Length: 178
Image 1: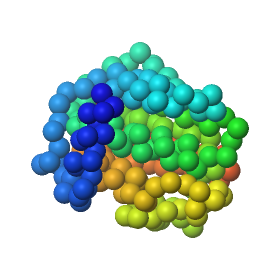
Image 2: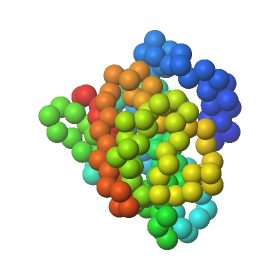
Image 3: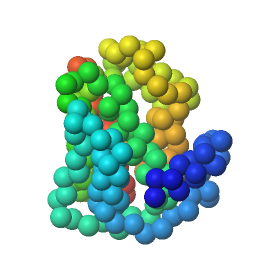
């Protein structure tokens, strides 16, 4: 699964600006199953006792029309940021869903350094790299992860809400109309 995803990523990431609703290959997916699969796959390849990623399953099941490749890559981008921008001894990422007002919210919560207020307005810009409370030069990346994430959310006609506290962490919430 990972090799296939990587191959697709190389092919499709060449120009992420073409991502829109028409280019998505949507199919019905139980989002809770997809989230558990993403966490399981990540933890197999992470093989690191200093990273704790979990999916808290409420037992609810929601079938969502989505592009599995784009959404998986988006979730992995958010997880990677939660780990890269984290100085805690154990980097924790907790993923869970909530439902209210005919909307499903996927929460991805980390115990990282949070997003400084001065950086907040730019985090979805292409090539933007935050100057957070960690050595930015030591963090790998091109500054495309959250730009890609925003493109994916908009192409699916979803929305995003971010709650962050510097030096405590971030709750990155993807809101999906039901």
